[in-house]
Length: 143
Image 1 (tube, rainbow, N blue to C red):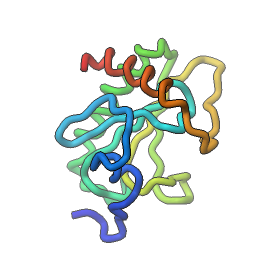
Image 2 (cartoon, rainbow, N blue to C red):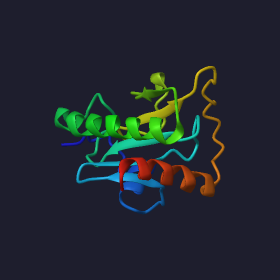
Image 3 (cartoon, one colour):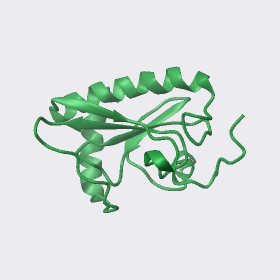
Image 4 (cartoon, rainbow, N blue to C red):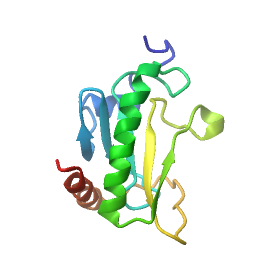
């Protein structure tokens, strides 16, 4: 059962319910992956379980296997789709860590030697860029 402090109106819960549009690259019964609208680099993707939890600290441990299997699948696709040198995987828990959306999620960001991550500036990426990036990732995922 989800933490009683879970806010079912958080932005990711709304995306999961289809109330807010997203550029989805992957979906199965348990997990959805979509483009971060404020990316720290090209191809920045979020992997989100459908099960409700604020973060890793209150999640049902049964979520972790399916979640990280998809994180790996998306990381491999993102690395190939963008010709990246590596991939950064980030996951934040509670405000002191930098968490701003209180639904468990994992950031998958392609990385390039010598190029730092952009700051999370609050500036949204152009929808056409997100669509193009999502298409590249979906192609690598075979969907």
